[in-house]
Image 1 (cartoon, one colour):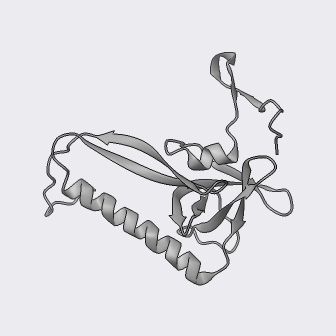
Image 2: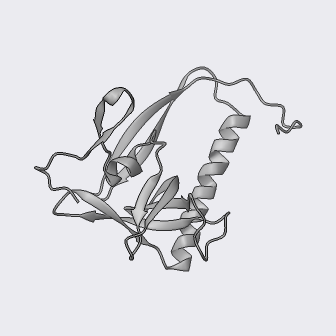
Length: 164
């Protein structure tokens, strides 16, 4: 974990350009991040995850992560719910596996609701150009921030046809 005064670790990319590596907080809360989340287990083994969704619930953030590789005890179609917790001294976050089955059901329920809303928007697009806001609650100061996104109208979809 980096201290505020330390320089971020750099990663070499194509054309020998050095770019700062994103922190876990930056990766989790960046709505356009498409990089995998890399965590370490209790034995120091690196585990790579796909970020499925960030779900705000009761002024806390939960992230749903799906293992990129097979993990013993987790089926290929399963994902893990983590609570995003702050490290007050560094401004960084860490993830804690959620064990409460009711809370896991609630988080997945909210995720399913988000998917249904997205499906409805694709079937019944809004006219003209619209603006949408995604609310992200930062756990450190528990204030809501918004990220604005604009979308263009899509042609209506025939509900009787299925895309393969």
